[in-house]
Length: 103
Image (cartoon, rainbow, N blue to C red):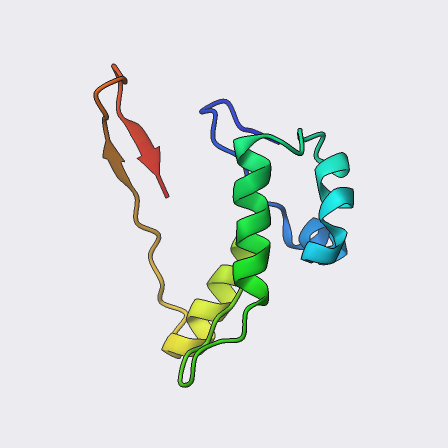
């Protein structure tokens, strides 16, 4: 699903927990999201799943957060604080007439 800005929204935790976040379920994911298997988005999604399934390097923690809540929980637990701030920035590329925010 996409919000009005054109950027995809993150899944709520409840939906993310029920979603099969696995490359072995990639065909199901594409069908569920009504994505063309030959699209650039599908290619990016497949690469993301493959990256998430790689073993972490020694000393590295590699979360594959499927929701904003998971991401916040991970950051809070590893930084050992709940005092977190969300930062955004805006930029424009040559083809755009208005800046877009990125979270």
